[in-house]
Image 1 (tube, one colour):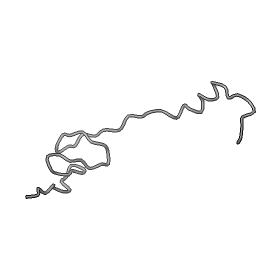
Image 2: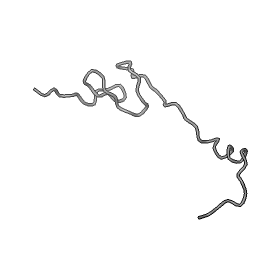
Image 3: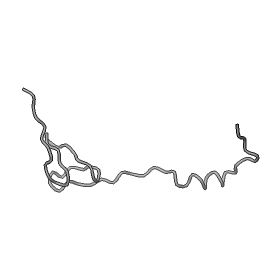
Image 4: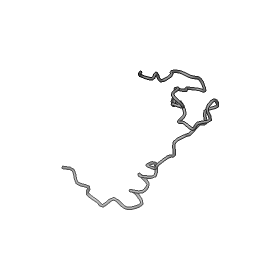
Length: 63
């Protein structure tokens, strides 16, 4: 196994971790339904699947 020759300093460690951070998701509002959803994702609302403000599919009820 490889072992470090010297201890990694806190500054060096933290410089490496600067790009590792949580980012909030981008939320869009559907122009048709007014529901929030992720950009470039379809979303269900009242039994209908919407994408870019248009109905793509409808949920069928089993009888």
